[in-house]
Length: 189
Length: 173
Image 1 (tube, each protein chain N blue to C red):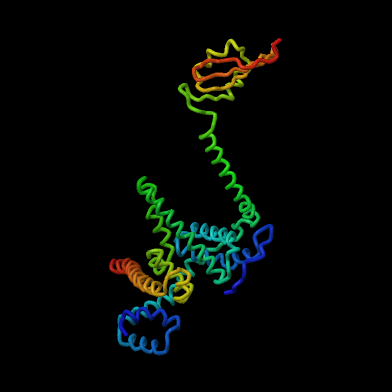
Image 2: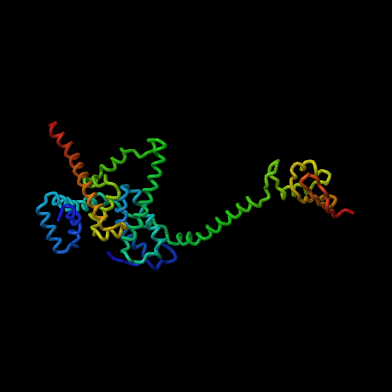
């Protein structure tokens, strides 16, 4: 990954460095955001907000990490903020009644387009999904993950261990669920 | 090496950050312990299969950089930010001043707008003054009564008891 600076913002239009960053890391960031929030539109919103914030905070970027890692950190904070807002909102919706909540059917229809492994991983809590993203999809080392999440290496390992165990169980359940209808069909024939 | 330590070292084994001795110990434990070996293999499977699965699922996702607003808009909002604070402060100060020192003091018949009342009285003759506004008068104030047709101006001083006393007269021959 190239490690470029962020200086030299021209007076008009998007700063050149940011245009390059958006072109270079935008897709990767939106995919990571989708993995975290499990919603395409929300992922796009998150990444837009990330770039807005990055433009504001460009002066504070010291170049100690790669630009993607910096952008990911901003996106992660925005995601946590969204989660907090959602929790607060859902509490109100809970008071208002079940009709206003997102229907479970819609969510399952969205999940049908995924393969069993992704479906299984999507059943994990965001804390575990994030660590799986950083470790198995982005291929980061334990020390790097600890730096990004601001936790100790021991915590990263223990969280990974739990995530792995839950993922294994979820994948097993998904495989069973996939095998069961096929076995039923075979039995009927 | 026990299983707990082994499971924590599995991740470092992949990162290749283990010392040769630790690696040897881990290899020996994995060869002897089927449960730890299963854990190791499941990590291996996830490493091998998940990226492809993720790529297939997230392939259609793309970010449109044109969504990001031009920097000039940001610089404008950044410039305006101190002004926003200034405006908010001024607004708060005005509200506070009105509440503490404002002309609208609640009396027994409601608010008493002295400046507005003075304007209303400017066309009245002195004889009409006392009755309609007597009930309103609760504090000392000066009322100016201007008679444009006669070209005269009179000033009256009121007090808490409601009595009105002429204190100045101009333009009358």
